[in-house]
Image (cartoon, rainbow, N blue to C red; front, top):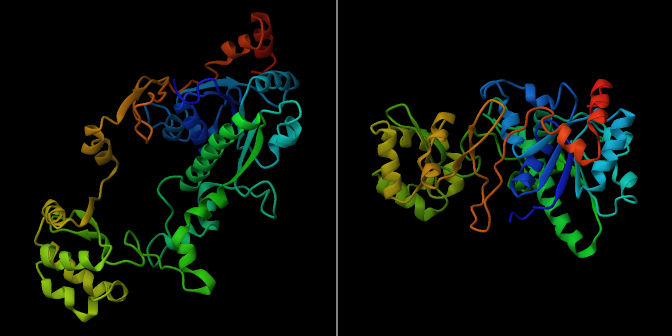
Length: 392
C-alpha cells in the first residue's frame, strides 16, 4: 500500500509549482484530479514539443494524474466542482492572484462546508502584503529573492537553468500538505496553507543571506566556482574537458598539493596558507592549477583526485545524465506511458522497500472527464449536454 492511497487531491494548476507538488502526491499514491480548461488545458502543454510532440515541462510534472476539463466560471461547472470537493481531502491551486477567491474556492469560503479539507494556495508573493497582486514568473522570483545577485559571472548575472523558484515552492507545498494530512489524522480538521515562491526562494538563500548579515559585503558572483571557498569549482584539463573539484579544509589542501599537483611545497606557501588567502589569490592559484592540469586528460585528473580522496565530478551535459552509470547501476530509470507512447522517467528520489512509487501515464487533455463525471452521477445525456454547452 502506498502512503497516500485513499487521499483525493483536486487541483486547479498550471505551469510548474502546483503541478510538481501534486505529481509528488500522486507518486505516493494519492488520486490527483487535474482540472483543465476545455480545448486548451494547462498552458504548459504548449511550452514545446520536445518529447515526441509533447511538452518537456508537462510530461515531467503531470504523470499519474487524471485530467478533467471544466470551465470553472460556468455555473454548471461550479456545481460539479462542489460535488468533487465533497470527496476531496486536498485542494491545490496556483491560479492568478485572487482568482480562486472569486470562484468561491478560498479556504474561508470552503471550511464550514468541508471542515476536513486542506486548501493549499501557491502564489508568487503570498496571500497578503504589498506584492500580493503582482504577477510572478520563475525568473522574476529568482531576481526578487536575490538569487540572481549571487549567480553568474562577475560581469553578468545568470538565471538557474531549471525553474528553481517554481520547484522550491512546489516542494514546500508538498511537504506542508504531508504535514497537514498528519495533523488532520489527529484533529480531524483541515487547514489553509499559503505558500509563497518568494519565501521559498529566500529560504534557499541560506548562507549568502547570512554572509551579508548586518550590512556586510554579499558574496560575489563567481561563475561555477564557489564564491568564498577556493579551489572549489571548474578547471579545464588538457583535452579541453572540464573537471569540478572542491576542497573543504586545510588537510585536503595539503593532500591536493602533494598528490594531485605534485607540488607539496605549495601547502606551506604563505600566499595560500588559509582559505581566505586562497580566495584572495584565486587568479594566481588558478593559473598554477591549470598549468598542471594542461598536461593531463580530464579522466587522468579525476583519477588523481580520486586517489587523493578529493571531491570531484564530471561536467556532464543532459546527454551524459541520460547515460549516467550511477543511475543505471541503481536501476533508477523506469518508463511511463503518454499520449505519444512510453517515455523513460526517473523514479522519485528516496528509495524505499516499503512501497513501489506510482508511475502511471501522463494524461491526455480531458482523458478522464467522462469517467469522473459518471462518478459524480452524471448520465450520458448530461455529459452530452455539458459538452454542447462548453462546460467540459
